[in-house]
Length: 169
Image (cartoon, rainbow, N blue to C red; front, side):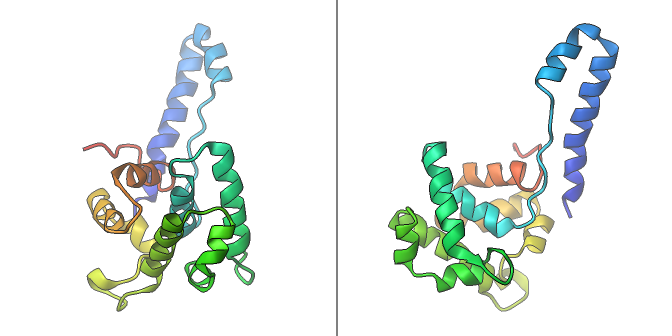
């Protein structure tokens, strides 16, 4: 499991604290631009769906559309967006939330990838556990095989959702 990679981000915060103690002239800068390491996401599916929603949109528009998407696709029992709920929702509902036809299909494909498979091996459905356990190369191969996910999207997911700071080859 790669949860330990968040330790590298916490080490950067410790380094900033050390610099502040060692060099008084850095204290105001470090205080003003405090380092806050990203926190791991609770739900990889939700983070990946958000990635698709936000692609090539201004932040304000993306937030609005994402909010509508979450409202339309939240499973009442689990109080979060789930692959099963996304598969139940009609494309027309996703379109009404502001998603393009293509993005709606990408998110439906992502939901299928989290739901499909035979339960083991290469054909197992994606899950939070599987994604967190994959190597960077396995993540890249698994996610770029899905429509709507390129290298940039996968790298951003690795950094900001899984806490893998060193993703460059």
